[in-house]
Amino acid sequence: MPIHSDGDVVMIRQKVRAWAVESGFGLVDQTKIVTAASELARNALVHGGGGAAHLELLNDGMRKGLRLTFEDSGPGIPDIELAMREGYSTGTGLGLGLSGAKRLCGEFDLHTKVGEGTRVTITRWK
Amino acid sequence: MERIPILKLGEFLLVSIQVDMHDRLAMTLQDDLTERIVKMHAHGVLIDISALDMVDSFIGRMLGHIADMSRILDAETVVVGMRPAVAITLVELGLSLPGIRTALNVEKGMDLLRRASEANRGQPGKGRHVPAQD
Picture 1 (tube, rainbow over the protein chains, first blue to last red):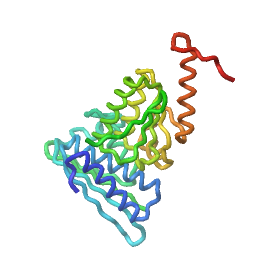
Picture 2: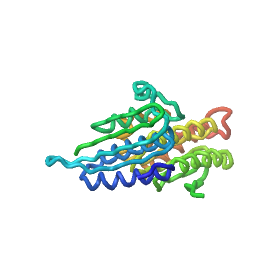
Picture 3: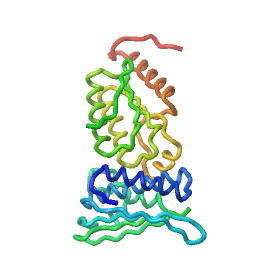
């Protein structure tokens, strides 16, 4: 799914909600996943100049899960440790996007290269 | 342009957010509300978020800004109807909405605004004097 406007961020939230319901997540987990997706999609839009989100349903035989990937080809993050710090922000936000999304999801993976872009993957198992 | 309606009820303004807001819509609401507070001489703002199934850091920040700006303009803000799952998520996200008064529902929120407004009027130099009740 493309992330090129704040309308796209809303579309992603709704799609993630539908998939989380489909995967059988409870209401609190659904809300956490949707909120994390909203933060990361907005990050890709505001800091990465737009990008794309990919949704995957997981099933390892024992349990179901949801994996979301957010990619942009923006400037990348020079100092990951600093960017992950709660309250740090280069934009006008609260600096809760990355650190908050990490707290809301079980697995969090960040790849970034200065000048090439950023890819964040979050996974939540049921 | 898409807008969230602001209703006037006596000296208070009422907003019920019924749509999944994109960021621009949230900013528009913030601007519209501050304008209406001044125009209507409103003493309180009630924001009903019971239809919101998620509040992320952007919407949280908008609510905080509205509360701050209305306070400067001599109006109280109360946010009502937050869903439990939203509250749990907000706290985990790291956002505890400092400076925002909340109430469980519209009725309790209106009570809170009325009390705040009466207390304000009771203060010297704050307009009409209303004798203290109970």
